[in-house]
Length: 330
Image (cartoon, rainbow, N blue to C red; front, side, top):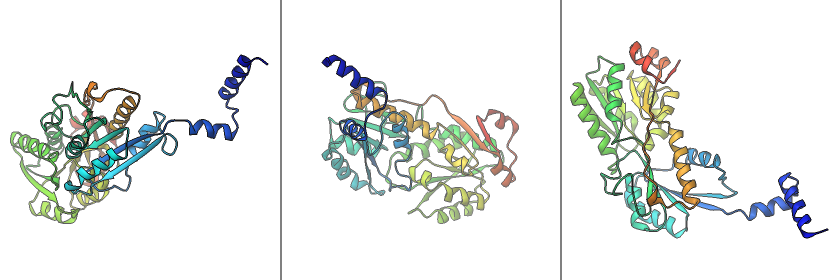
């Protein structure tokens, strides 16, 4: 048999899925394995990395086959970030996903060559991390969660629309040396001044939510704005239960909060942001230069209201607001 014919048969056999287990193992072993580093200031959540591996799997990257996720968590200790960033560089990862501005800063200080994908609810230009969103340059690109600043002003306005009687609203803030928290607090203060709302900022000390809610109740708050923060996603059920216990109508950062019993949210899709993040990882692994990729901002936001929660609180959501909702959970 001629050699060309043998090759043709081999291709046909491979295409038809008739490879033996040994042949399949050999083919898989020849597949390149990519190493993706992730650096976060927070502690490791119980579902660490759930969204990103799922989103990457949709693009063909499977842990244990062609993907290694190298996760680093600083447990809230800012001083640990530089060493963790250095560990990722020494591990020779192909790209680093840096969540939050302090993680981005640590990665930028650790390497000027490895691609860095920033990710979070902050303004990287205002914080001096990149010169512009359109042309970040260097080895940095990524995604931010809001088109300009944060969504705090619009979120507070919607909470006020849902609870018109609310003249004093508490803002639950994560307590950490993280500048990402400051813009949202300030934007909420500015919006409160315009809306005629007295804003009470209460921080969570060491994960003690019971103490934080006791302070909120002592301030006679009429409603609650739960600030952004990875820990508030991880601990969302505890926060939602305390809000229900103290009969506080609350707006949250992500749809997951409302699905789990929170009253309302106005945001992008949490999983959708991880899908976009995965697409950036994919493009860089395929050879795109991070500095040539504009930092992406979301263009679509969703208002989700849990009507069952509203009824449990004895709260009648105005019909005009329900008509504006993208999703109403009964």
